[in-house]
Length: 198
Image (cartoon, rainbow, N blue to C red):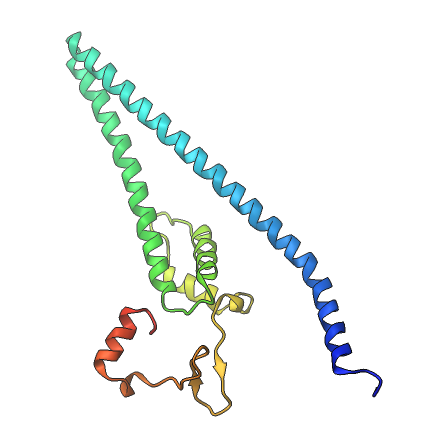
């Protein structure tokens, strides 16, 4: 046992770790490239759908104008109503999605993520799992978010808490002992809240 030096041990650990991480890194790179390709395809599809919708709306306007010129005011009015209903449907869908997204982001703001990518991953995972019920609501977003964040397999998304052994939490970056909100001056407390540190 005395023949093994610390340098030899460090070298062996680094080599074993590098071998294990190589496969993991390749899988992560592959997953990220597939995700990026899927997002690009989705954005292309959405852009094409927007162009189609704009062309269909323009064609309906031209048709409505032609019907009015032909004296078919009722048909023109019905066509305009159909187009208005389509636009309202699209706007309602966007509104519902934005409301859902805002609610999920609001609930996720209660957690301290390790980085922006972790926060985005949690957001995408949670929103992709939400479904509307028969009333058209997204269900209980609060419990969905808390259940997701409480799951042990999602712990890697959160910033690691530093334990100094003294029973007090410390700021990981500065080593400062974290104060209770009641111990912080009000102006400093408001500044930390505004900065998203609390």
